[in-house]
Image (cartoon, rainbow, N blue to C red):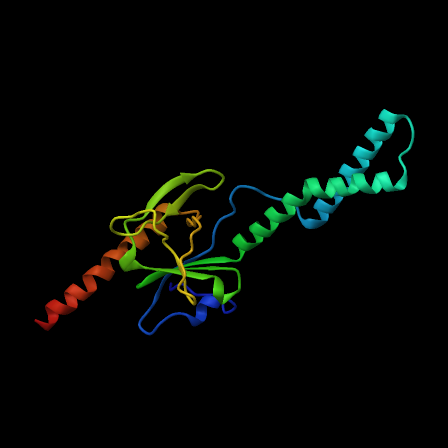
Length: 198
């Protein structure tokens, strides 16, 4: 069964003539399950209430309204990083990985400007490594010297993506084998076509 791209994905319009899909996937959750926004709001209210009760009991009298509001604002400040992490989780949920017979593509969110690519010709053998908070992931390097170079480039702008962006998939070995097979086929295809011409 051939892989199919979601019609809403920005990747549907970027495949070139002769480029065919081999595999389409999405990242797995990184093992952290964050509460929904309504529960985060409840946590902020509960944290502010408990803090207000604690301070009131320590000073022996109820706090003025302004002081109570300040404590609730403090609760929001403490919980705000979780809202940011939820935003990052949402980006991960909207990410699509694609392997074609010519390149790897990665769309982060629905914006075409966030599509990254790397040609199979530029890839060194793919590794599986353990990364803190993500577990076992697929890690990509460029061929040749200078492994610290950026792997991914943005499709439209051509700028390098300097972030470390491994692929977080369930079946790492299966996907790694697919990529390695596509890399070998990429290099053997011109050789076989040249030998046919001779």
